[in-house]
Length: 100
Image (cartoon, rainbow, N blue to C red; front, side, top):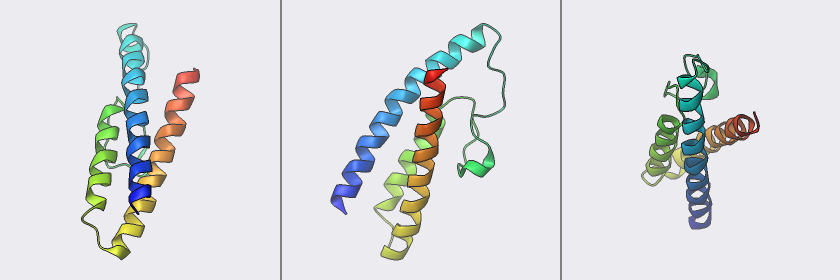
């Protein structure tokens, strides 16, 4: 279980760095009157956060990760699955955004 937590932590650090870069790119687009949208992710993506930047979603992922340490075994599996799904969506979106 410790190895899983370390891997998640490393992935969250990678997501954070990519999110900072993506938010800077979004700021530049918005200053050019581009990038008009309500939120990065729709509700179906699994996030409770609704924001026009990536860092609030990273904060939600971090909070979910920290909550894992207080979960019992049964809740841990369900919470871990939700966290991994959100991380996959985030990484996929950041990768797509970077290539645009």
